Image (cartoon, rainbow, N blue to C red; front, side, top):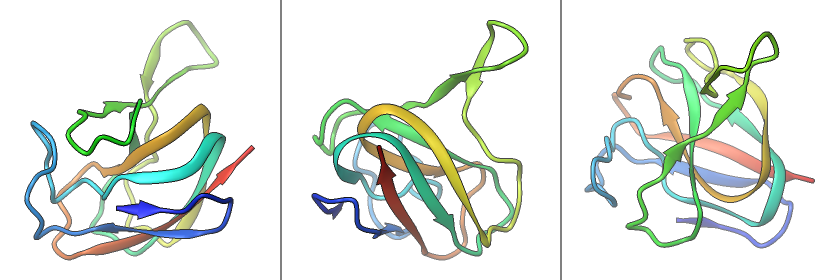
Length: 126
């Protein structure tokens, strides 16, 4: 688990060899639980080189490893419909800034299985 109680950068591992931590988890696509240390207004994420995939977030209401996270949705600017927050598919090598609205715990989710472990870097914002 990646834990740091400040606004410093922290590494988050997507370890494809670990057993699932919650019901229905696809470990080849899901990172360890991130604890930003405070209820952040947003998060910046450096996306490493990955197998071609989208990147999104699964949010949790608490730090219990067994809590099943849910996709972070957003309101589209053109209508009242919502959709899961995702990047477009890519092979990584960039940074994203995602509005959270007061979330402390989340996992990074890729849209396709990764063939090796990946290390992301995250930092909460106010």
